Length: 130
Length: 130
DNA sequence: GGTTTATCCGCTGGGCCGTACGGATAAACG
DNA sequence: CGTTTATCCGTACGGCCCAGCGGATAAACC
Image 1 (cartoon, helix red, strand yellow):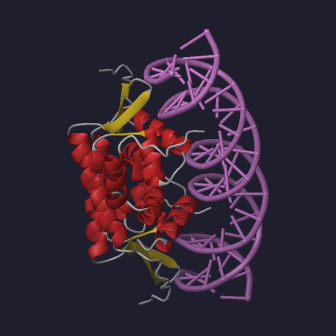
Image 2 (tube, chains in turn cyan, red, purple, orange):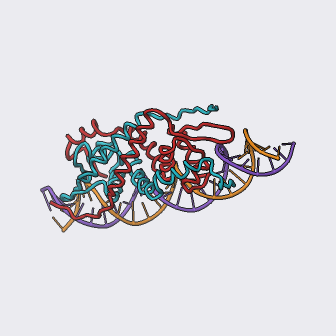
Image 3 (spheres, protein in one colour):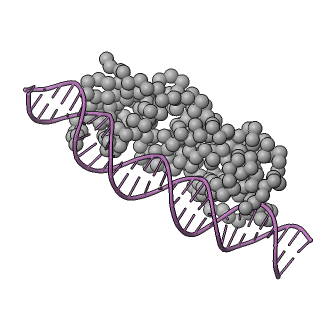
């Protein structure tokens, strides 16, 4: 087991402790990202961004997924506070939460789409030395 | 089992099929988000954004995590193409992948931080009807 | 060369998450 | 009022992921 009473670069260690994401911030962000990380849920959000409001069956049809899966995804999105439901008879119509959150979500998805498009692509470079 | 030869709103269904995230896009994004969703990995990235370059031991010290966990996190970040390693003797110094990806990552993290700060907060509103 | 140090790898186990299935609810329709 | 339709819920199962441990590698130091 390594000791580490001897940091290699103390300045950077303290810099990180001050500037980097705190554990609690990272945990909150992780919770949100875990919700966004599922392909079906991301597509549901994307669909709602495009159409304002849809019911479970149409979403399942449009996305080519089972209704159970869509229903389950919408439940998680709702408990995460990202999506709201409007009941009309036996149908449930879902839409994104309104307001600043909607725009923040749109911007985040756009950014992430861009980042993904950069295609990090596990470049296997192992030979570095100086 | 529901039939769904009868979409409620065919226009929106086709709109989603054209405009929403495709399955493959969502899968790629999901892979990336799964990597970002882990609190420790997000904090590692945040630390590297702040300091340019650090070794495993210092990261573990600064983040209050075990070296094994940090090493494992860095491995995943490396295979995801987000982080690069510079070997110097027995030490390994890690830095973010350079170029556009770095800026895209910084922008994404910033956006996500903002989105998280909006605090979706599982608002339990169930009573909607018209 | 032997020891210490910094990091990495393989393996194992526990835990969480998503899907599928069956039944339940509740509205429309005749 | 019984059936059909759209959705929801509870449960069980399988799979993936991450922390921890032990050993391996490889450089520095005496």
